[in-house]
Length: 397
Image: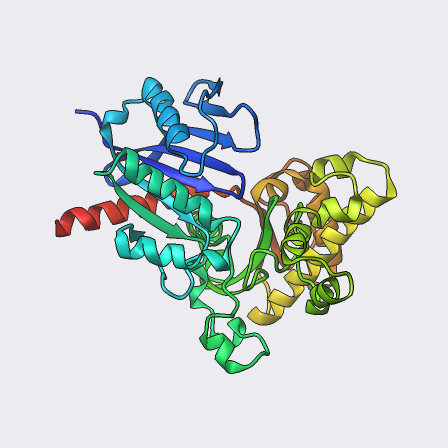
């Protein structure tokens, strides 16, 4: 008898990463993965197993319900893996609001609650809902679970979560939620296993990808984060603006007569590194460019990251460890060096050779703050939580 399998779906605003895991002795072990970029025409599935990666052209096109695309995708997975052993599907859901503080089985009531949170994450939440409903349609007997990016930050106090606006708005849900929680959960897990002393200390982690944020942990619990009510807040990102004076939005509405949809597109897709440079949203291209606009975009990126790290250190009352993770954080020494140079006054000092080699520990022996590079794996957390939900559902059935 084969070991049971589970799938994970990690959707972005225009892509979805699919993980396939074998469940052995209660643990989820990755055996394959796939990626679909919905902006490509025709669609392609990049499918990877232990030995090779294949790029498969999909016949299906993007529809509102995604039934055809997912049916074809599952067919390709079944051609390479024993998908008859599939028992569960786990989903990353960006926003759990105040309703969800951990993973849940997706039933009718939880699906309705996830749907009700669409206004708080209009670019990401609908993608999760489409995938959940498509799996319900294609494989209705499978247990599905939701893992929430906001749940990890529920340990933050109301003082941290509150904006200085009328109290009734806070009570209506207009507050700081924080995101990238699944990534930060994985980082805390890795710290606990590899650097247990640091895991119990005051840690600032920088998740630097196309979406980017920082978070502060004390003894493994989230205390503060750069993203707030939406995924726009905090540091500049590939195409998102980061923190912005609300008066700018009022000015665009009232003086430049921009529509709300145009402002939304501006802030989510035309700002950040792309907006400042006018060249690219890809930090690798900007790092390689000699144009002054590219240099300014990267300087602004590092400047804001360092400033946010210092603010989070204030929340914690110190900083024992700084962690870089996600695509930029894990693979771009120049960004890490620029950030850490601005934090030298805190006692941060890099070892140049270790940093250039993307080593696990990149701080010098003299540094008062440990600086680490740790790869993140959101799909592993989704899989682990899906296993826990599946076991719970089976125990009560």
